[in-house]
Amino acid sequence: MTQQMLADRLGRSKSWVDKVERGVRALDKVSTFRDIAVVLRVDTSVLLGRDVQPSEVTERAAGVERIRAALSTYDIALGAGAARSVVLPADRLARNVSHAWITFQHARYPQAVVLVPGLLAAAQRVHADAPEPGRAALVEAYRVTASLLVKLGEGELGWLAADRAVSAAAGDPVLVAAACVQLGQALRASGRARAARSVTLAAAYRIAPPDPDDGIPAELSLCGTLLVQAALAAARDGDHRSVADLLDEAGDLAARVGDGHDHHATAFGPTAVDVARAAAAVELGAARDAVAWHEKAVRRNAWRWLPPEHRAAHLLDAARAYLLDAARAYLRAGDPRGAGRVLLDAERAAPAELRHRPAARQVIAQATRTPHAPATLVQLALSLGVT
Image (cartoon, rainbow, N blue to C red):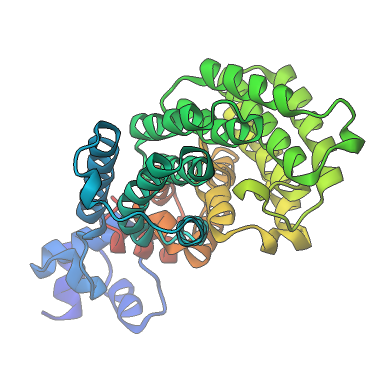
């Protein structure tokens, strides 16, 4: 097929075809890729040299089912198979829990999905064998499971895991507060913003020290993170005043804690609060404010200290964690190239955020439909099977 023949069938000029072939002109629309594929009678994946139907979607679904099965097992509680159960030493279980958190925070979601079912079973066995010494590990196992499930768009199942974390933590205010972070996230992800706000506020004020200057960083981090969760829930309800008050309160605690810490897997500090302000602004429809807070956050030196999951989530998740909010803000502000930049930044920081998060795929699809979407973003969308 000559260039002229291809141009005629596409309704384009021969010069346009020539420039595309030589790389002078970029293909910047998903529809254009499809049109060329139709004319050439090939699959779109041939033009990209990769599979357009990613296996990540089916693999994610299978992984979620394994986690669901692990949460649905009651053998240990009922004593079934207890004699055959191998109970891990407490220090080994603690290392496994820490490894699962690190895997999640580095956005290695496929690996985390593999780890979680076995971690839950091991933590349940240890807790059954020694309830008090094994309680903290069981709570953390449920917490990381809830975080992962919410990340994968499974809010209802994440709620179950978070609820179990709260139940296991009962009687220990610090463990309860830690579990309520994930409970708030799961409730918001399930569309229960008011319940999320109520739970996280109650947990925050229960653990808050009478004088913040006397508080220890770990507890201040939990309290501040819970206030952030409450603020995001209030934003979902459109309560501007409560959002501002709660985030200001969280900001005061963050100033005392400082950046660069990860107490109770919260990554709480001034930068995290700025990221939350951007997320809340998007929820409230204040796109320009969201962009401003996003740009302030990423200019901080401490931005690089946040876990990759936290950074990529700020670029990728308007409702749940943080950076996708910035991308949506750019879209609402009429800057699709800005949206493309932050999405590509997120892809570099944590590729699994794009490949395994349903919310991320929705925003990529939205960004590629805008006029003048960057060609690199269009190619990314096609490689992920997002249309």
